[in-house]
Length: 101
View 1 (tube, rainbow, N blue to C red):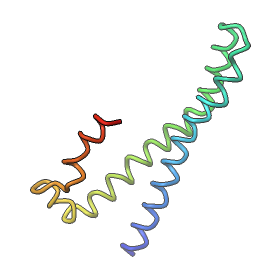
View 2 (view 1 turned 90 degrees about the vertical axis):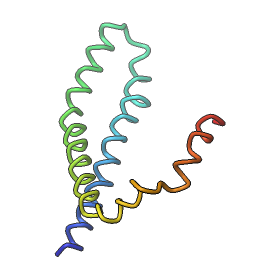
View 3 (view 1 turned 90 degrees about the horizontal axis):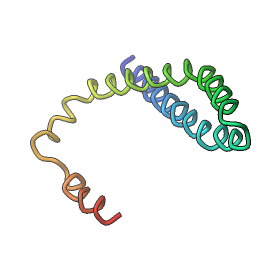
View 4 (view 1 turned 60 degrees about the horizontal axis):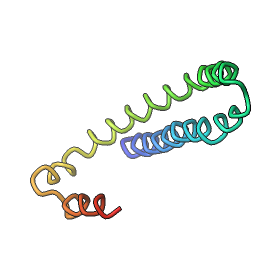
């Protein structure tokens, strides 16, 4: 049963992440360019309507993403404990990567 719950949680986590990020991408790359030729007041009104229609889906996916992330972290708490004592080399190299890029 535990294996099933972790599988379900992982699946819901990925679906929620795709939905959340997809809604942001849709707003930025589909809605916003379509509104550029319109007058600012009309564009803002249409953007608010689009935002209101996607808001429940976006917030639901964010809540599911947070809940499944916490469930996954709590389930693997003992596996994550060594990271508090000795961080992996990836964390030590990440500031250099950020400075270079």
